[in-house]
Image 1 (cartoon, one colour):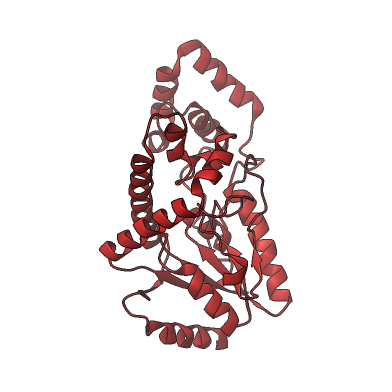
Image 2 (tube, rainbow, N blue to C red):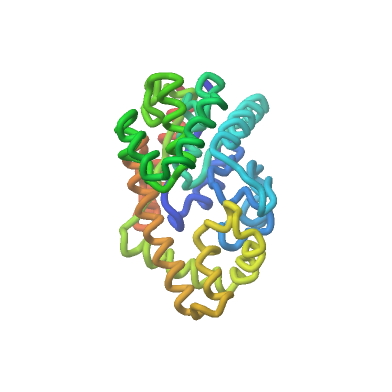
Length: 305
C-alpha cells in the first residue's frame, strides 16, 4: 500500500509548522485536510498557510472553491486520493494535514460516501415526500422510529431530508443508513501523528489566535461571507458569529468572545473525534518541543519498512 503521513489535531496546536518541517525532511507534499481552507479569499479565519510559511513545500486542495460553492466529504475523498496517487508517482511522500476528522477518515478508509446507485430510488423518495406533506413531520419521524429506530436515535426529527433518505435506504436495501455494510478497510499504510497540549494552554493559544485574526482583518472576510448566507462557508466558526454584529445586534467584543468560545468548544470536539475514531501517536510539541526528534525518528523507521 502507498505510504501516507497524517498530521491531525485540534485548531491552534501547531500542525502547520510540524507539517512543513516533516515535508522538508522527507520529500513531502502537503494535502490540506481542512474543510474551510478550500475557499478562496478566506485566509485569515481559516488560518491558511501563507506563501512564506510554506517554505517552498507544495500544498494541495487549498483555494479550490469560491465562497458560494458546495463541497462535500465525497468531493474531498475523490480529489484527495487522486492527489495521493500523483504525489506518490513523483516519488514524494503525501502528508495529510488538518482538523476535519470526517475528511481524513473518508480519505484513508474505503468509506462509501453519499447514496450509491443501489440506494437511490426517486419513486421511494417521492413517496415519503408526499407522506410528509400529507401527514406532517411528526408522523414522518414516527415512521422512521418504527422502520429504523437506530437511525431515529441519530437524526433530528426536524431534519426531513435525512429522515426521508434514511427511510429510502432502509426500504431499498434493508439496512440502516447509519450502519455500514462492512467494516471499513484502510487503503494506505498510514502513520498517524496527533498533536495536542494542555487544555489551558490550548485555550490561551486559541484566544490569542482569535485576537490576532481580528487585528489582521477577519471582519473584512466575514463581510464577504455575509454575501452568501446559505453557503457552507457561512456556517464556519469565525464567520457566522459576525452576522449579528453586522446587523448591529452584537458588539465587536461580544462577537470576539463568542468566536473564542466556539473555537474552544470545536477544539474539544476535534480531540474527542480523533480519540474515538482513529489511532494516533500523540505528541505535545509546545510543552515537549524536543519530541520533534522522536517524531522524525519514528517516521523514518516507518518509511524504511
